[in-house]
Image (cartoon, rainbow, N blue to C red; front, top):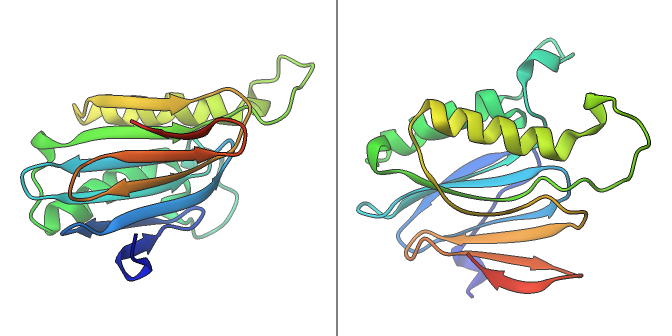
Length: 164
């Protein structure tokens, strides 16, 4: 892989790519790396979702890429402006781990699973199917998504490398 062809997506960030560029995000623990892809135009997008809903935001001015409910609609719009057609979008996702064990039923401690649920709910709202996912469990992941092939490569220390 040529580093010049890699578009890095930071935490609470989103980017789009086309023409064979690779979208990459690292450090997915409870965060979710979600990709959207239009195979016909080869336009891809990736968001690194940190939290499930902007309703829990405490900052005066929110980072829309931080929350599932605000980032996914924004990513769809950015991709549409690049010529992609939302009705052809398919999604892949990874992350959403429960990195620490808690002995409580407090839902606020389930950030990873709640991130996954919120992403799926938003995708359902836009009628975007989830083609594949590698979510949950308790380990970190790094993902790369190829805007030419639509393949997601997932790397983790504990699980090695796999492709979905």
